[in-house]
Length: 90
Image (tube, rainbow, N blue to C red):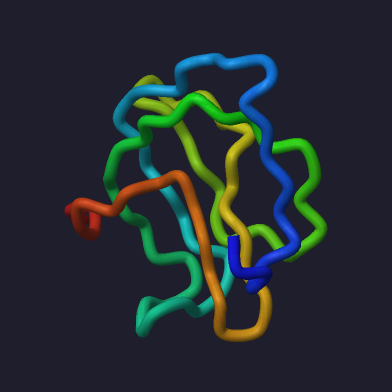
């Protein structure tokens, strides 16, 4: 929207992405450490077309299947469909 990330998305082939997620950060972001595990949810209809920036996290659905939407990180800017609820319990 404002060009902070190189991500390109589309609503052309609308598909609902919905569910609980677990994400493991790949690098430091917003004061959180690499490899920190987070829980949250995802809800959107758009599809990622191009993601030239570094992935933000490995993201998994409620049954442990890896999902394609990893979020993006460029310098200090991050963005993701993942909405964090909080860190996972150890």
